[in-house]
Length: 111
Image (tube, one colour):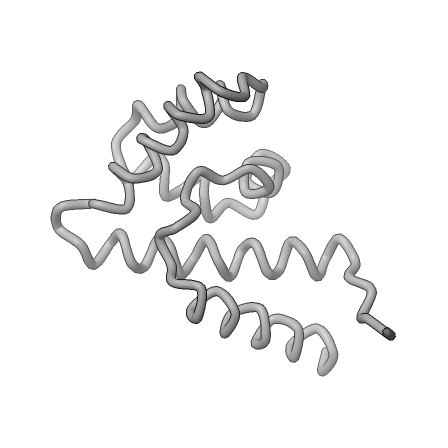
C-alpha cells in the first residue's frame, strides 16, 4: 500500500483549511452553536484528559468569538500548535472534512 507521506506543511495547510471552514460555519450562525459545542468538548476533555493544550483552549474559549477566531486562523506558532488539538471537532460533517482533505492533498501535489 503506497500512501502519500505528508509533510508538516501539508498537515498545517490541511488544519488551516479545516479551521477556516469551521470559522465560516460559526460566523454564519448567529447563535454560534459551533462555539458552544467547542466549549462543551473542551470541558469534557479537561475532565477526562487534562493536558496543557486543553487548558490553553479552555482559557481561550472564555473569550469573545472574534478573539477565538483570530487565534484559530492565525498562521503563527500558537495558531498552528492549537489547531493540532482543536476542540472544534464535529462542527463540519465527515463529508465536508473529507472534501477539504482531498482539496488540500490536491493543492500540495500541484504546488
